[in-house]
Length: 370
Ligand code: ADP
Image (tube, rainbow, N blue to C red; front, side, top):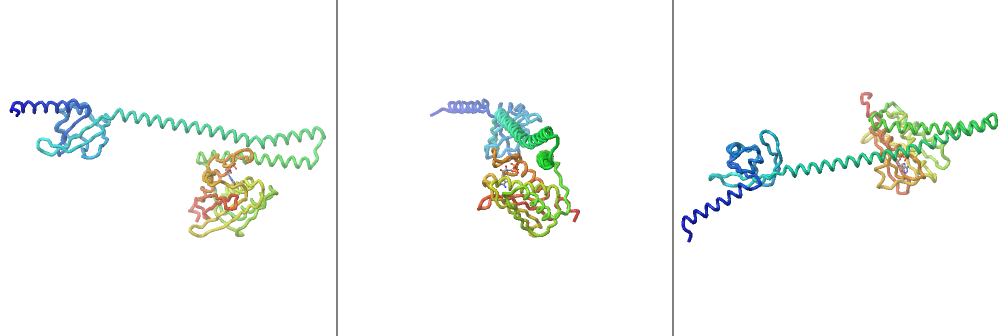
């Protein structure tokens, strides 16, 4: 049996141990009463809040003390956010009444480390993106130079040939001259188109590509383009179907560019020739639209690459066989979208590719005209 003095001593020893545990604890411990006023704060709490226990006790803690999950709280010391702490709260009793005991662990350093790591990661991502952009630009410059060099070289070779023939013969035969002039015109037009495309891309990048819609007979526009394209190929035969006339609000030059891009691609990507079906249709519902489908029987496009075709520089068929800069469909999509329309692609089951452009019949960009 313990004597009363032994009991008192033991009790005092236990109290001392408890006090030690609380006083020396690295975590801040505060007790908050029912009205949110601090009733107790240990030395670690003084450090965390940068206030003495006397200042803390009797004043509101200044943050919600909610029993339950661990929460992250900003530590405000003398008006400033001085750090972050992880707070755990349990129910307790203080002076015979219900209270809350909050244990706060200073995680400011850990958070700072996390932030630094996140910043470092973001910087790495930005660096990788910048390198990727540089790489893309270099690849594009190589591709564009190659594309521009071909017509430029033909222009120069044709001019040299003319000079040599003139020097040798003293004059030029009319048909020699005509052939050379045709080639010169052809190649300078090709050069012009390439440069225009590059200019369009820089306009799109700077959001400066604009359209000037007017009432245009879309059927006439397409059939003129088809007729002109038919003259450039003996291996393909164009089959145009559609109404006799269909007037829509379109930018004539830009739409010409769209139609020619689709027709040129249909020829280019069906090197063995074949039929190219060009179909014009219109719908009234759900919206009044005109649609143009260009379908070839060429190499087609694998399904997983179709979404990317309209991206800048994207080429599904790289290599020597097909020249190009991967910009035509990018510009085409922008022009179509500026008209309030859309462009899609699919590969019909019996091969080839089909590009479909749908445009609103009315001028989506200038409602005041109607
Ligand atoms: P380019 O022809 O100069 O490469 P485009 O932007 O006009 O650029 O076309 C992008 C890519 O889409 C082409 O490189 C090609 O891989 C694919 N493509 C376009 N039209 C067709 C088509 N009719 N058939 C198959 N692939 C096509």
